[in-house]
Length: 337
Ligand SMILES: C[S@@+](CC[C@H](N)C(=O)[O-])C[C@H]1O[C@@H](n2cnc3c(N)ncnc32)[C@H](O)[C@@H]1O
Image (cartoon, rainbow, N blue to C red; front, side, top):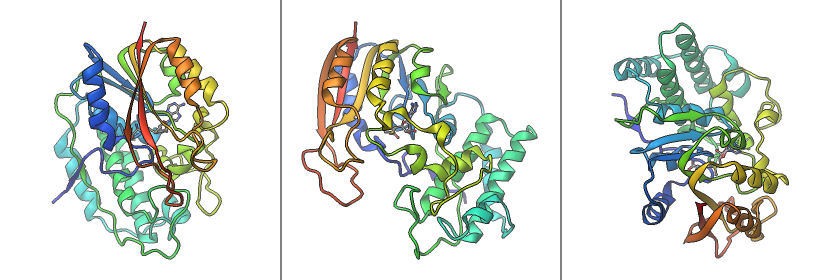
């Protein structure tokens, strides 16, 4: 029997699942006539999932997130029976073949046997797609199933900056079927671009912004999922086995963050802008400190409209090393002029 999983069954830094009631409440109480929502730093797509009754636009610079967002939110048709039958076939297939995954990642994040199976599954999805046996939505559902299954068993603490040496490696990998939404809006659209480019091209009643807060690049943290999702089989290096990630680095993680933020806000075409940004400005270590300070946020948003701030206490990510007090997750709501 094939098991199933929801959009939130995934570990992801800065994932807003726990904040959804707070985000929804803020929107319901303060925004009028919202028919379209753009989640332009969508990550897992958890915030978009709170607005599935509207027209949704999702976007992320990482292809691994784009593919998952396509699976969850694209209104294109798919055959559930076909996808489930392929997943069952993959689950029942035994292999120890050599392939890109086994050759490069054996006994790191996964055992050699599991690497072999991941490589086999991903290659087969690629071939089914190239031969026209599965459409784009079906392809994205199968890859999403693989990425979530990998996340469940990887010997990491949720990110791929390193693997836990000597940890017990899972003996197998089990694919499950995503519990997809019914009645998605036919105008939904998923994008895979720099958010600063995208905002010049779209209008939405509400644009939700959840950029990276600090110097941790998501392309570093999730390189392995990105590698499997894109399946270009690049050369990998270093202990963590990362590929070249220069094309997917975010401007929001370095000193250009203020400039990028100003350009983003200036070019947004919306009635409301909702920004998530925590107040770690100078409280953690250098790596976890926020890149954009409150003054800049307020100055920039105020040029666009009237700004209100809502806050809720929320536990920060600090790799378990430091306990950072008074951390609260804030929402800046700008009612655009
Ligand atoms: C804080 S996370 C978003 C988490 C998301 N709200 C969730 O609940 O899963 C920030 C996301 O922005 C993406 N990102 C970083 N820079 C970007 C850019 N310039 N354009 C689009 N996406 C970007 C990262 O890949 C990451 O997934």
